[in-house]
Image 1 (tube, helix red, strand yellow):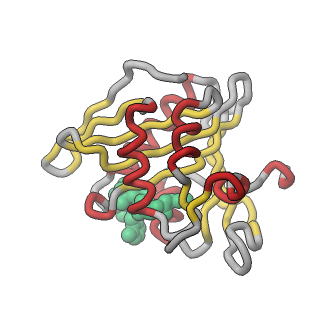
Image 2 (cartoon, helix red, strand yellow):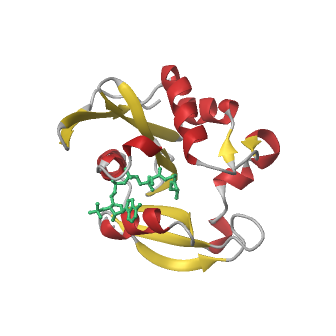
Length: 187
Ligand SMILES: CC(C)(COP(=O)(O)OP(=O)(O)OC[C@H]1O[C@@H](n2cnc3c(N)ncnc32)[C@H](O)[C@@H]1OP(=O)(O)O)[C@@H](O)C(=O)NCCC(=O)NCCS
């Protein structure tokens, strides 16, 4: 199993990673109140590229996806991306690798603009991922997260992900990760 665990961010490095400072579309929009405002979660298209790139740049110091990769992620048939909007402003996104007929879905990116964090937006993105993953008959969700990324680890644990193993140097030298999984349904 471990041989299949590689970093999308670093796998794509030669082509497209910004190492600087740091088709499937449906109508299933979901609106929910977050604090006093309404947040809308919907499937992204390539027309959301500018917004997704803005969130990516605002969220990762290193190993950021460059624009061309984000475009491929938004249009690739094995990927889906959902975004969260507040007052028509895109404030968060999540991209998932989910190949047809494959019963695992892999979260390869999730991020919320700093000014909109700690208001439940990532939780709604996760809920959107689960809904769509189940629609695609995925039995489990998996992801990798840096061991030092406390907020993200707490988010995943709160939503039922379990740490399965450690991945030494996953994000580069001395930057270890946890591999985490959540079972959506028994086969
Ligand atoms: C991780 C991230 C997506 C969380 O987004 P968010 O919208 O702020 O998260 P939410 O408000 O939905 O928080 C849900 C839960 O996550 C955990 N959490 C989120 N931010 C946290 C923080 N700063 N400290 C501790 N726990 C935190 C909590 O368990 C929280 O539940 P609670 O409010 O009941 O305590 C956001 O911090 C981010 O974009 N970080 C940069 C990009 C990144 O690291 N992505 C993950 C890559 S694996």
